[in-house]
Length: 158
Picture 1 (cartoon, one colour):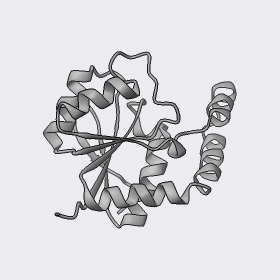
Picture 2: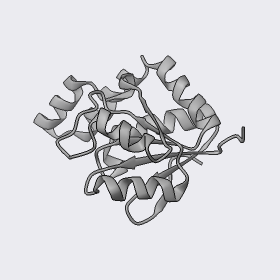
Picture 3: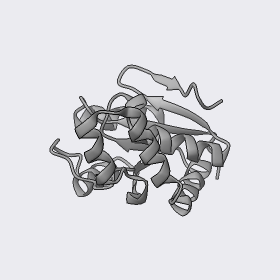
Picture 4: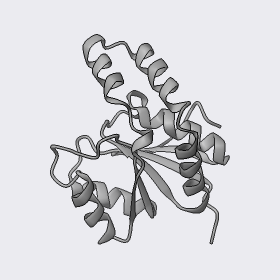
């Protein structure tokens, strides 16, 4: 099996399921790693079971790693105070306790063309970027962010 040299992130905000799948397929993603703590969505097609079925029918594996999701207490505090620095600090403290899940994700990125998924379109305001940076560093892989228009190299990760 060819070793993947890149790890991707993607958010589904503002996308239809069809456009989301098309974007993944056009890039050659074969594994989507859901890093939402609770894989539920009010947006049609993006809850765990429906998304897994849609991905499977397009030849993409679905993996959910809830340990890498942002804990409810951290999300709730951010909703109240909007303090991004505090959010980052709280989430990083959580992530330090998730070494096994991070190593599992790093292994995926070595073996497969994987993309981490969460909701937010802006990867700079989503916990998935923090997770992806840690996994890419552990796997020595390049990190790229998929947007609706383009693919953006991660500026914090060479």
